[in-house]
Image (cartoon, rainbow over all chains, first blue to last red; front, side):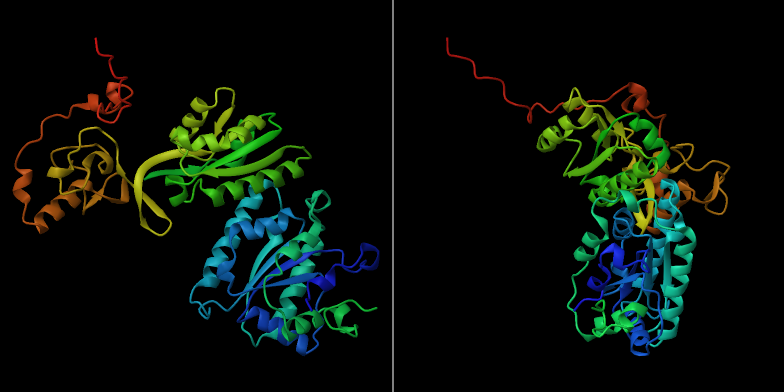
Length: 192
Length: 230
């Protein structure tokens, strides 16, 4: 089961999921925080697609630009608290790259606010819920990306490409973090 | 290595003109190492141009490819077909790479995506500094391996000027005085006597003052055809 797959419902069934926000989360903190939020059944916007990375240090400029170019309305990078990165400085590098992408987006003419960095520990499930809510509100205020209607691949191909990790019960918890999934008999997948 | 930095996106877009098919060509050598024009930078620039094109409501196609070394024609043969299909070739090589592309492909419209800046080295992660001015007559043997041509604002050959203060140059308080560095290095090595000899005025004809430079190595050229026995 894969939480990202759960978001690829036909458009006519997904009227409440008009925005596509990709969240690149590190395995050790942000992903675990999302897992905790799901376990605690905290309400989170269903617009956020989680992509698990070993560390946000894996995030590079091209990865963030790729998400936006393929039609994501917003991209969030969520790593460990600064100073607490499992790999020492991965989250600091990620912040630098997020800032670089924000400057590049200014040159392109796209709102730099569509990309944002967050930090949290694995125990901060509440912070995860707040972060995705903040991001959802921020992207909601900006509206859909002007690149989206012209993205020939659509978001499905993007999510397919990012399915590189093994998936277990953790994904079910992240899926459960969405309000849609919580009402589903099978967490992480849309209801029948 | 040769150090460069990317031009602003608006300038690049201006150079592209009305070209509908754009091929961004990266270089796998110097500009890869200085993160200005390698494969990753070509990917990023192509992505930015595609996004910008969409936002402008235009229909330009942008693709990218990277060759191992743009400054040698042999490496360019591999992209001949892709260059032929492009309206504009946007080179992320140094100025030499741009010219190599333009010389090798007569019909190609080649534009630069970088400003070639200097020859230097990374002094720390993310920082590059100039070290050589290619003057054609190296003086490093008598200056402790520190170049007064590249690193002294006045290119002095016989000690610092009056603008040297506390080891820094008057043009920038963050900039080391090259002659202070030379003195400190030779002093530490016990070779200060190397500075007693006055260096005569430099022959700048070996530098840019002599016009475009050229080196010919007869031992490396293609051998002339053998003469038939008479």
